Length: 215
Image (cartoon, rainbow, N blue to C red; front, side, top):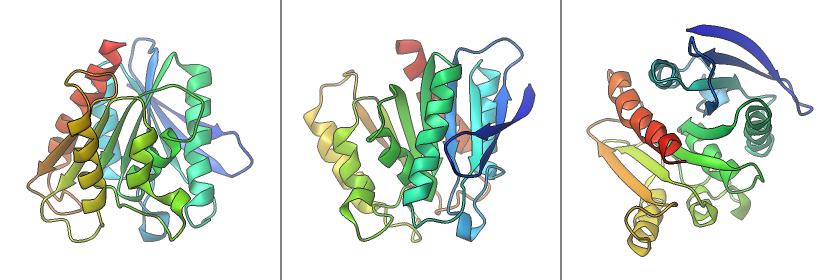
């Protein structure tokens, strides 16, 4: 495994860590950290665990830190810029995010012209602010790729219920095996998945790996 620093272009100071497998990778997952005002960063243990799982299976991962706090708007653009960077350097791009980052992954995927292979959202909150354009639950309707929503049944931190409800409604409308299939997984955990980083990696990793194989 190799790691290198990446400066994500786009007008904001966005720096990341690129994890690559030993052999050249053609696929990459952009990993979005939790809320930066609550200590969220690219070093988040859940992001690192998923990156290591992906690396073991030949997939690169870009974990990054957001630029200056901008109430979700600048941070969404940070994600989109990271996706654009990934799309310029790899053939296929997937998304993963935790908490605030999970919501951003849904919002960014729904509003960018780069093809996204799959999105895995761990403990997303339904909205990042009062404005409709930061409504992660509503963003689900615009996604045209496989989506995985993973929540902890004891999570009382994030308002994840509207995301799960909308995901389940959309899943019921889609055919099994469709290109934009949605799955919802509930784990016995709190919002932070304390002591369960391996479980997170073994839940998110196979979903993303399977989506890449289907392409």
